Length: 515
Image 1: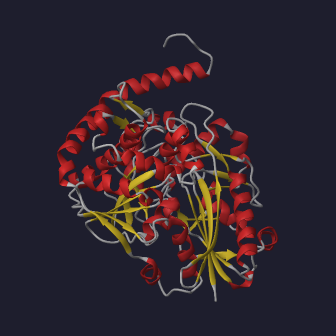
Image 2 (image 1 turned 180 degrees about the horizontal axis):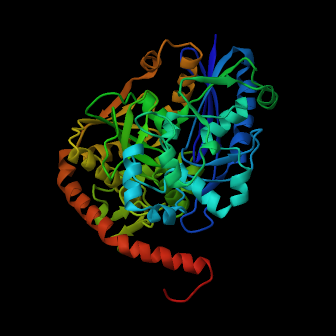
Image 3 (image 1 turned 90 degrees about the vertical axis):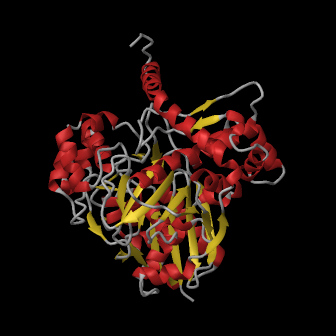
């Protein structure tokens, strides 16, 4: 029996899973991660903690499963995207503190890019300038930590950093490269013009490989640390979002995939960027382009709700041996559609694709009768309303979306899937493998190691529909009205959120004077 190891470095947790050659999950380990927020619009993590968690998880799995390391064919890794990890020539970590995809400290540089330059780069990269893209985050380091920038041999994405720890090699793939704002969408290579516009050096970036391509074997150093065999192959892998899209079967017209994890995305595919200014674009593992909108605080927002507003209810759930999220969803299920007129704006981490980085979360419509159950219901609906805004852009662009696959952690809750079917006004399907990122990473390793003839052959082994949720027509009218209110509130609150962000920034710097 041969085995595949999958690694998923997520924002809220790191998951490492061992699969056998029949795609059964033999053993796994999950380690929680935490985000540092120590300045308005900043969000970072300790990159060193990622590798430490991966090492501990692999050692745990090898000990628990009893699988001989030599029987593990390959390692495939995926991770949250766009965060620049600074490493030296030997792969050593030069700064543990790493900006995350949702970190928006680069907003001034993004806003300062001239219209003419932005338009040229738009045609080169397929994307508008955004706080999302790793190139701007590297530029921030160059301007604010110049010594670190000069000392850095390569800036690697989180996934590529783990691969470097495993192999000693410096590579990225096209899913990650397309998220730097420096890759030419036509050639799949680095663009000198885009690099110059962002203000970073080509020499600081790794070479680009295919997601299924073997970039090396486990190094002797990594073998000593993890217990893996030096004969085990390591593939380049992809970002976590593209890995999830791979296992979700996103490969046909009329299909969109809602991936609700720490962040949430709604995505469809095409052979080239769509060039719509309310959408973001990334290359997928097979060479297509993913058109998507994103909400940074979906699962992250649910965790915040659990730990603050619903802290007492979550503790009750734990005492009863229940999952807090399931318990809270059960409370929300007792509340009718529309949450008694309560609307939630889900922008705890600002916006990336169709709004301002200054946007923030808000409950509107609270009254003395409002309770936790209504707030949880409003939260679930608010996330769906935001994602429906992206579906509306797809429709404007002539992309007839007929069905939606709901994947990742959010798809585990039946209520959330039904709410989305009602709000999207389309059938929503959950899949047998709802946590597709880590499996997708493992399957990429299997393709690279030759266990599967092709990516399509690997996908056929695992893809299956679990359940269909059809829209409840009784809820159509109220959700149409609530969506209209949601969109109006979104637009009308933007100036207030920008002003509040300025006030918060001054207060954190000890400046109480008026703007």
